[in-house]
Amino acid sequence: MDSELRSLRTDVEKVKQIPIIQNLLEVVCKTTGMGFAAVARVTAERWMACCVHDEIAFGLKSGEELPIQTTICQEVRHDNQAIAIDHVSQHDYFCNHPTPKLYGFESYISVPILLKNGEFFGTLFAIDPKPALLNNPGTIGMFSLFANLISLHLQNMGLFDKDNNQINNLHRQLKDAQEENRRYQFISNHNLQEPLRHLRMFTTMLIEATEQNENEKAKLLALKIHTKAQRFTKMVSDLSRYSSFANTQNNFEKVDLNQLIQEILGQLQTELKQKSTLITLENLPVIEAVRPQLSQLFTHLIRNAIRFAKPEQAAQIHISVVQTFESELGIYEMMGNDSKFVEICVNDKGVGIPQLQQEKIFDILNPLSYDQVLENRDITLSDCRRIVRSHQGSISVKSEPGIETTFSIILPLTQE
View 1: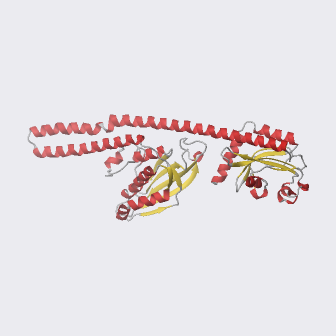
View 2: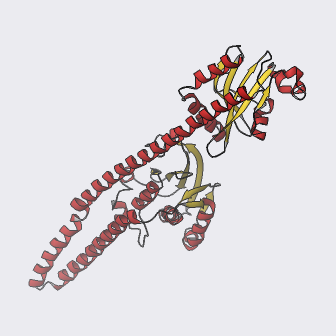
View 3: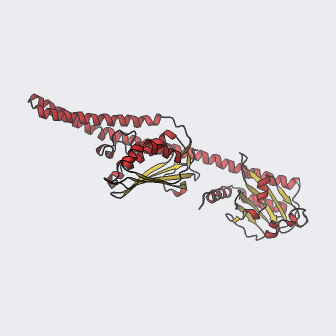
């Protein structure tokens, strides 16, 4: 399903949710004597019925389309003016118009439905195979009033959706905060305690070796203490940096991902050449994002793919993209209102990640970050997840050890 059709169907559902819409269409027919009344969603390229009231078996149903070029609504859209025809056969212009002949009507009225921002949404219209008195201030005024009422309902729905989005975002942030708190508690009780236990043990052994003049053993223990202290310092440093991320200011702007990735590849040119890296890119979109954070995110993922390439083989990286909608993602609710998202996949044909490590790879201080050292890292995969979540998105990984690894990043095209 293309994005425009999906958007049209979403708008159709919004109109159908207006509580008074069917009564309004019935009033239109009873007041004017017309046999068919409807609300249509009209764009430059498409025409779709939202709600209909049919007393003449015209046959058009909600959600069905007519070719835009066969409608008079396209003229209403172009001129942004109402059109009312009492008797088609006697009209100077419309007597030879193909639309009345095609659909078999003699009377027609259509008024534009304009949203608060001035955008043309569609039309409220009515037709009948018999002539009717429509081209008068009273009838046109009534239709215009009803069109404004429909616009007002759509506006209120938009405000309701916005409030729901804010509630969903707060709920997501609360869940993330609870999860982070759980991780910090685990780190305090386990990750940070383990090197401290080793330091205490090696220090006790060093004291004993010194007292017994076992110089070689003392040197070895001192080296172990130094190594453990370095590792502990790095863990505390990473944890401190990770904590400070929440205090950074998010300045969202339009980011061309094609341009961003090319800049990153230029910065990683030496590393790419060292592994004879073959990298392919699909055409990436422009999204609203914090540019420095996305640069960090994709730099780390590309660098990861290079460093975990198969030994003695050229690194192979492919970055692909697909645009989708929230309701198609199957992940936790993020933006609401069936927002448009983009899924970017970074695939490499490297050594892969064991299944057990995949489950914890995005955790703070996960073992992979330290036991299979990535020295001089700017960020870790836990930072990558935090960056993506700050953009109201998600990140996941799929990997077959010895075959390939794919990181999937889902981000909204716009930030609401």
